[in-house]
Amino acid sequence: MPLTWTISHLLLDEDGYQLYLKDIPSFLIMTTNPKVDKRLLDKLYASLDQKSVEECLVRFRKRDQKLDEILAREQVPEHLSKLDRTDAIFRITLPSDVEALLNIGIHDAFYEKDLKLLNDALYSYNRLSFYRHRLLASGTDHCIHFNQVMESYAGNDLALALKMFPKEAGLTKNGHKFSVTCANLLISIIHQDPKWLDESTGKAKKHLTQKVGKFDRSLIQYLLALIEKDTPAMSRELAEICAGYRRATWVHEFHNPFLKILGLIPHGLYNLAFHALPQKTFDEIQLPDHEVFWKSLTTYQQKINFRTGEKFIVFDGELDGLNRIYL
Image (tube, rainbow, N blue to C red; front, side):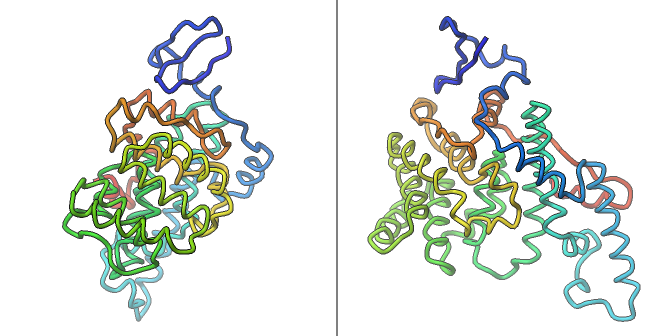
């Protein structure tokens, strides 16, 4: 029985009968996913040093042992000397150690046809990524968190987004013009502050009168359309964002090529709309038909009412302190 997903949050069978999502086994949800380059996915997975959560734990234990060696030196490096042990482990953790969780989640969700795995992986990946990044970005303007906030929305982790864009921090002021523009639109949407919305919208529209790349323009216009509740424009711009996503190297610089398979920024933008708009308005947004946008993930998240995932990795023993990422 072929299944298709509709904006009304229902599945229809081939005769047009409605099937509620809660009645659909989770493995069938994967049938709505667009084609994924399986050869590329297999190649990328084969290149991973860690191919399971258990192997990720082994890698973190090695980082912990490495920290012991560093702290045993006569002179401890300055960047570690004032950190507690847990933060010191975060500090010497490599990006690939964190990215491995997301990559395993993408691979396993696709092959096991279980989107819960990916939703859980997003939760742990975003949390680890934030705690590592905050140690490296100390003293910088919070506009640098724009990408991470959008990735947090891809996993519906609103609490984490608020850690990066708390209301008391206000609007951003310093940084790349585009980053400041997008961050301030996002901050205004999250906190629904009328004064901030007016200010950020005005500056964004002024920015669009200048020379702006196609992808950057679509992203700004999507956020403006969200503020104005213009769902046809949102649908159009989201499709453009997906179309240009793989060429927008600034988004991730694609040090992690798995992000060319799953577009966290487009998913984050779509989920942001769910959390910011009335349900009826949100339902009017048309899903993009592009392989970086996994409709299966959206369908699963819709089924669980866009909640965060559960813990994909839990640290034990000497690594127990790393579980602070979930607090």
